[in-house]
Length: 341
Image (cartoon, rainbow, N blue to C red):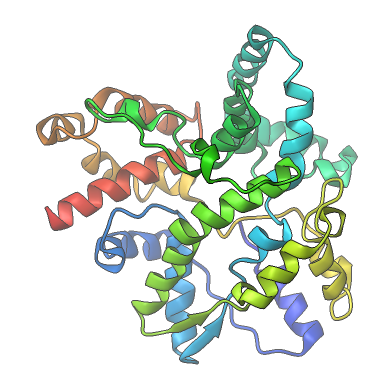
């Protein structure tokens, strides 16, 4: 999770001022109790923790900042933009029972086991096979193997809970952008379709909400130059091979960056802006999480079904699955309810 050394090298090369903040479990425990006030609604993206911390740090120095939000959506930067199409090409011809069997086999090894295997194999792995948090990604891939269509594959990759309605008493999931083909423009390929859905749903519903409220909570103004409409229009006018090729995205931006920073300083596996939430939920945040998700409390509340929540927490604490993001969804809902209801 720590990219501070790489960031310091880039700053040194460019001759810019560089400030490092090390996020600790103490930071997280202090901040989780403030999140319902900062976001005002049940908002769940684990990177809201480091985003708020870096916003508070930035506000000590400036009143306006620039962000890179929108760059991935317009220039094809998410991992799914370049490997989901090839994955679907391989999956589609396979019989459903065979895919289900493969998924079960992948889940037999817990995330920690996959991480250990990748560490052992690291000296001989090609660069394209070196990924961050391989255990979590292996289980995420297992969840995606049962996809029936390419749109279903996208939902499984981009969603935290594959069947959120199962968590709620008497609920059905309302249709979202990937379920409404009548709203889609004619797009030439799967990658462009994913970029469109990300721009329509994930960007405004998650990314921009997260950054805007985290910065506004400390009176910091954030600006997103990649979302200037001229930049967005230009990106969508480009042929796809200038954006995505093989196992890389944002090719045009990488080429531009090469003018200023040697590739050796920045060429690493893509990582989200995360904290080790999986470990913190088994350690310093364990009691806080267990109290919010206590089965009897949920039964009395009558909103969430206690049993799938109990299994989710138990599997995570036992290390059978890395359920950090699923649990974070539930915890943000329950923390909001506790604060405002």
